[in-house]
Amino acid sequence: MGLVGILIALGLLVWFAFRGWSVLLLAPAAALIAAAFAREPLLAHWTQTFMGSAAQFLAQFFPIFLLGALFGKLMEDSGSVAAISNFMTERLGEKRAILAVVLAGAIVTYGGVSLFVAFFVLAPMARALFRAAAIPLRLMPAAIVLGTSTFTMSALPGTPAIQNAIPMPFFGTTPFAAPGLGIIASAIMLGFGLWWLSRAENAARVAGESIGDSIVNVDAAVDDELVRELATTAREFDPAEIHRGHRSRTSPPIALAALPLIVVVGVNFLMSMFVLPRFNADFLAEPRWGSTSLSAVGGVWSVAAALFAAIVTLIIINQRRLPALRESMDAGANASVLPAFSVASLVGFGAVVAALPAFAMVRDWVLSIGGGPLVSLAVATNILSALTGSASGGLTIALDALGPTYMNLAAQHGIDPALLHRVAVIGSGTLDSLPHNGAVVSLLAVCGSTHRESYFDIVMVAIVGAIIALVAVIVLGSIFGSF
View 1 (cartoon, rainbow, N blue to C red):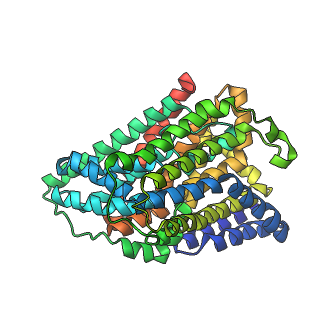
View 2 (cartoon, rainbow, N blue to C red):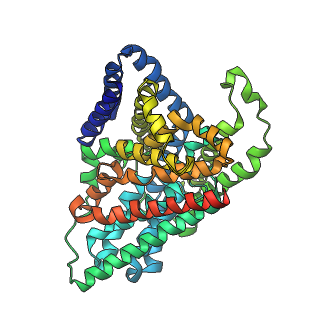
View 3 (cartoon, rainbow, N blue to C red):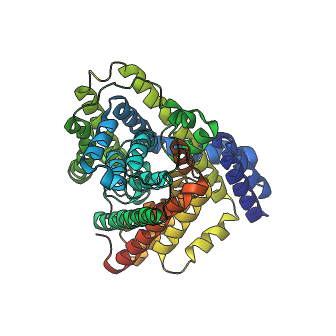
């Protein structure tokens, strides 16, 4: 009955979440259903197992949620994201409209701008470019997804995305884990995605397909409660805060607009490769610091320091363009809360399930998958991210339950933890883009499109391309190790 309870609880969680119910309510309710089928103590699982795991997640990663949302909001209100988008439009023009949209999205998200901030700025830009180039507007969501939600989220070394931060405490790695493999995976995702979109564009021209009449409606998407509930479990920014604060009427020069993004990447690299490795952190072993180690917290420290430095830089160079600085900062801070607590609730649900006796069957099945630890880890993160509709939630659940086991297997098989890190992150970013994913639903709403019109192309650039890259990383990593 325990396994049946887990399946029923998971099914109810997915079913009601897709219909807009808050994960803050659904996750504990589903956890208690699973515990009830296993005849386990309900209140103990809620207050000790569920809340303990959720609190641990917040303690580890809330600084990144907070600073990431704050940075994204300030980048938007200062006009920096718009400046970068406009620069790419002017440089590449309508003849390379798809490439302009993809690269603009990649630049801002790799630099640390929150996904939904990028959505709301890129969608109007993409619509104007696609109409001028006579490209069907149904391809617009796929182009934005390719630039914002694939290689810059899971593969590019040093990306400050929360998904890239989650494995670091489990494996003792840095944001730059397996950089060579990450670059190869990024090239595969980008190359395959651009090839597919170019093919789709040419096929549409040959068929005489009309541009379409999709209307970009950011306000409607922001005000849609269903979009908000799904979005906050998928990424680190609450769409309801998009229009709060005060957006600058002017944009900074491109050099100043890009400077905070460069600071994020540069400080992250310096902290990971030079500063923290030389830092004496023996004091962390003391009980008052949680009896931890630098390898467990160093990755999060690197990303947090990079985002903080970029925020300070952004404020200094955009003082005149941020006349309502407190309002913008309040909106950014508020935008981090619901996503962080939503993902933490999913993590709490996973902790309860992992604590049930029947979960041993699930663990044994995952570990018995042929192909070795890398393949089974990829399958585990894929499945859990697909079911939860959240790369960060699915990844954390998988590593909470199986992280120590995979570290032991890595030691037995001589696998570098950096390779585990990269496989886990790329795996979490594949099937998380199923139809119920909050980022997919939100983007379609912003672009005025539907699943029927645009989802197939999203599948090709976000799922098929990522799976090809994941297979390549596993094969190369198995042959050559981490590099």
